[in-house]
Amino acid sequence: MEKQKEFMREAIRLSLENVKNGNGGPFGAVIVMNGKIIAEGYNQVTSQNDPTAHAEIVAIRRACDTLDTFHLTGAEIYCSCEPCPMCLAAIHWARIEKIYYANIQEDARRIGFDDHAIYEELTKNRRERKIPIAQILPKEGKAAFRAWEEKVDKTPY
Amino acid sequence: MEKQKEFMREAIRLSLENVKNGNGGPFGAVIVMNGKIIAEGYNQVTSQNDPTAHAEIVAIRRACDTLDTFHLTGAEIYCSCEPCPMCLAAIHWARIEKIYYANIQEDARRIGFDDHAIYEELTKNRRERKIPIAQILPKEGKAAFRAWEEKVDKTPY
Image: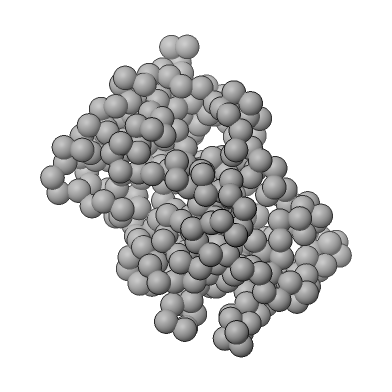
C-alpha cells in the first residue's frame, strides 16, 4: 500500500500545483505501469482552451504517446479526484486495469464541478436528456460501417 | 431540415473517407455554429496512438482552438454515430447545445465497437464495476480543492 500512496501523493501534488500555476481545475493524475510512473497529467481546460483536457485524458494521451500504443493494458491510474464520465469512459477505451482516487464526486460538486449531473444525464433515455439529441440520415450513415466490415487491412481497437 | 442533412452528410463523408484512409474507426463529426461548419473531426485512435481521439473529441478540440475558447455555447454537433459516453460527456463539458447522429449504439456494437458496455458500466455502483476502483488518501486529496475555493483569480469553467 505504501507504493500506491506514493503514486497518489504525486497525483495530489500535481492537483495542488495546478491551482497555484493557474493552468486549470484542481485535478491531477498519474499512470503507472510495472511499478513506475509512465505519465502525468493535470487539468488544462482553461489554459489550453480544451474542455477535454482533464488530468486523466492528458495523462492517457501522454502515456500512449510515450509507449507508442493505443492500449494501456496492465496500467493503473491514480486520480486526485474520482474520474468524471468522460474520463472514466476514456479509461475503459484505454484498457487501464485499475483506478485509484482520493476525492469523490460529491467533493467536486461542492467546489462547483458537477460531474454527478453528467453521470445522471448518461443514464437517461435519449428523450429525457438536457441536450436534445436527434437521429437523421440513418441509412446513409451505414456506408462507413459497411466499408469498415469489408476492409481487410484494418486496425481494430 | 435541408441544412441539417447537409451537415450530417459531411460527417458521414468524413467517416467513410476515414475507413479508406486507414486513420482509425468509421466515425466522423462536424461542429456547426451560426449555420456554418467551424470544425471537423474523424477518428484517429490507431493512427495517432490516442484512445481519446474519437471524431467528436477531435472536432471539439479543433473548434475550441479555432474560436480560442473552452465553451462552445450555441454550437451543434453532427456525429456519424451516436456519441459514446466519453464523447457525450465531452459534449456536456463543451456546452454544445444540440446533437444529431446517424448510426446508433447498436449499429456500432454490430461492427465491434461496444459503447453500450461502457454506458452500462457508468451506471453501476463502484463495487460492481469491471475496472476495480478504490479510494485512498481522501484527506490529503482535499488540499487542492481548498486551494481552489480560496483562489481569488481563478478561471471557473
